[in-house]
Length: 421
Ligand SMILES: NC(=O)c1ccc[n+]([C@@H]2O[C@H](COP(=O)([O-])OP(=O)(O)OC[C@H]3O[C@@H](n4cnc5c(N)ncnc54)[C@H](OP(=O)(O)O)[C@@H]3O)[C@@H](O)[C@H]2O)c1
Image (cartoon, rainbow, N blue to C red; front, side, top):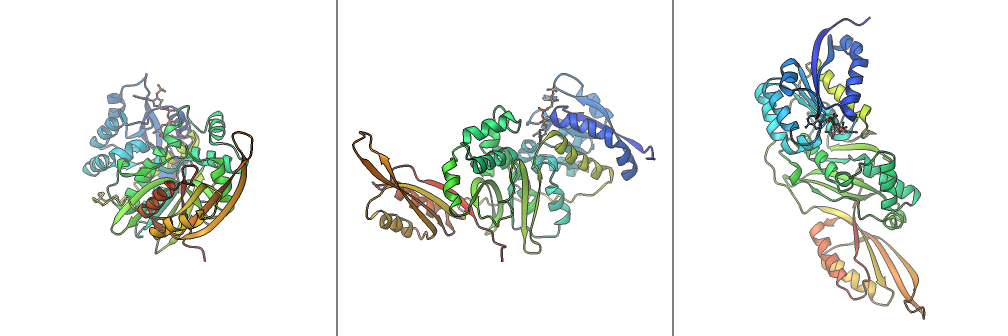
């Protein structure tokens, strides 16, 4: 029989997909939490766009749970709760990645914790692992598949040969993608999550506007099919890494070799890989979104607060953001099939010290427009060794100008697995 436990009153801001599931979960798990912590959570007030008064809810609550989303009024409500010394839990990646510094300072000033495990990778406890289990480790790099919608789309394109538009339509029909999918497919949602992970992993002040990101809107089924010849798998990957005293935080579609821990993360799942000399590499994976899953991560933060689990979150130090980063690249060229082509391409790559690791060529006959004959065309697909992005771009610009190149070159980054023996 669970003890009654001291009542802890929760002011719930937002009762939509996550807020509704969270309210149900609190009612369902109150006994178990009372047994665990000696404190019994109870939702004491609910604010939606049409009901509730924030001042009254704040005055009455012991803890504020922000599940509204967006920047305002969420920022204002969270800041006021922290200033009033009330612990806050939020699942709002836009808010934390944009106003993290300001809100952490408010949390430090009043001593009221601000927790946001659900903001980054759904139910995966990535923040708790980075802040607690790995608090003593020097983290060099974090890779993440932190957007379930795009992972679902890319998985469907690879498995069933769907076009991007078909896979997006399917994701929308199943409720994985919003009616306006821009934030997901454009990479902005993943960029916000990577800004938060970079800040926590490296202890530096990174904001969303410092993250370089690309989405998956221009990926074709052909890119995925051609790269399969090299055993590569396409994912939308977020990377935060230390480089020469600075950091780089980016989100981009990337090919992975099958041995990479993120290569086997399929469907709407998320995963986060953390690399540090003292641990080599760990990978966590699990559902990336969903009302009940996200609510469960919020509840985990609530239990931390009820247990008074301390969080050490140093100030974010200023840091140089490195933009020109080394990577391997996949390059797909459509060219006229005639002598000398390969030599000219090799020369353009060589001028920029770009060396090729794998190469494949396909020749195909296309009917001439007049129907009188055929044009021989060739597709050249290659993967380079690691090279600075600026050098590779310079080589591709030069190749694009060559008279025999028939279409815009297609370029996708390739991430190599460093820890395979
Ligand atoms: N859904 C997911 O799977 C998921 C996963 C991870 C993180 N998150 C994050 O969780 C948060 C909530 O997402 P959600 O999917 O639950 O959103 P949602 O279903 O749209 O619910 C939003 C709630 O906030 C209320 N609200 C909106 N504007 C408000 C305002 N100005 N003042 C007071 N209340 C307002 C809405 O009121 P009405 O009820 O009156 O409309 C609704 O109850 C977001 O930060 C989101 O990024 C969601």
